[in-house]
Image (cartoon, rainbow, N blue to C red; front, side, top):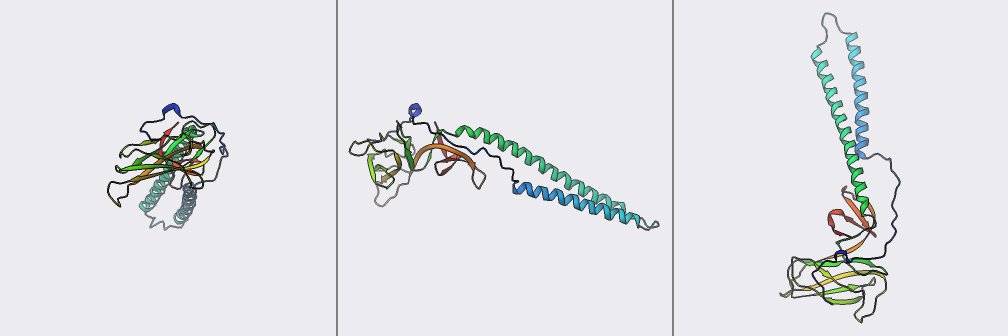
Length: 242
């Protein structure tokens, strides 16, 4: 069965699976919030010490040589500026929290949805009528072989693929092996093997696979990711949502 260059559109259909989400609320403060608390406490302690020193100095100053008020005024202004900056940071942190909460609420719409993304592994479940598999070639090839492998890396089906570059080629697999027999539900993998016109020339092939979103979170860089099985996929890498 040859691959085609069409999209599945609304033909996608699979059994609906129940997903579990973690609804617990964590109150642990972030590193930035802890730094802000430390800064506020430090400012308060320093300002209290400063007032004590200033009061003591004024009580014990020489009446004939009173202290210079310029230095005192400058220090008070410096404390006021630091306090204002800390307050601004605190308000910005609150705004960021509100924005993140709004974004997380919106991202919950991905739960239970089928998405396509760059990758080669996928699950075939009973009742599935279409598998949105595809690939792109870095440059045109002389020929392309498309293989479907099972969980033991055994080739169950080989097909002839499209050879042009710069477009996404959809792989139409009818869930049968090379002998025309229906395969069993399970984990499978898409393998693309292009052959170049030039000898020893390697052509990069990018496969696209699919899965059901069962979780939403953030990676170490703070980017929002969706969990598809045990794979974390950044939202920016999703190519379609069904």
